[in-house]
Image 1 (tube, rainbow, N blue to C red):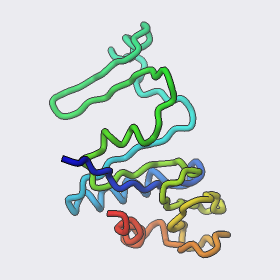
Image 2 (cartoon, rainbow, N blue to C red):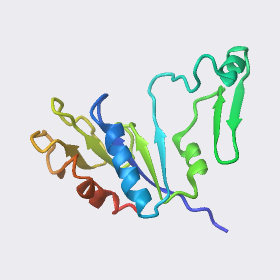
Image 3 (cartoon, rainbow, N blue to C red):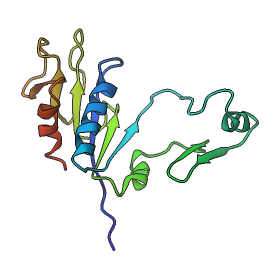
Length: 163
């Protein structure tokens, strides 16, 4: 049996442009239609996946290279890596998804919707299929469709091309 790769699209933009808010709306709309949607949040900095005071954090701080917390229906793994992880390797965890939304990766070759805030200009350079901006904002994007980022149905129109 051949494993198929999930459809992947990035929602990119500068910090505080509204990426997470838009992604939450997209996920809610697609989940209500029965789609299985996964999200990968890219963090260009080191992040803290666990919080001080929890058992798993205490164990990680003691020197564990990997800590997994799981229940009957979910899991979280925090693991130190010996080398940089390739984005493509992450997709194996999402093989059963209809769509994977990546938050960030504005300079990647992924097809992307760039989110632009009230005071920013479009900055992504490759594979932008649409720019999601407030209706009052004009961008400097030539030949790229501009959609109202508050109109989830308009955003979904572009995403549906991939699912």
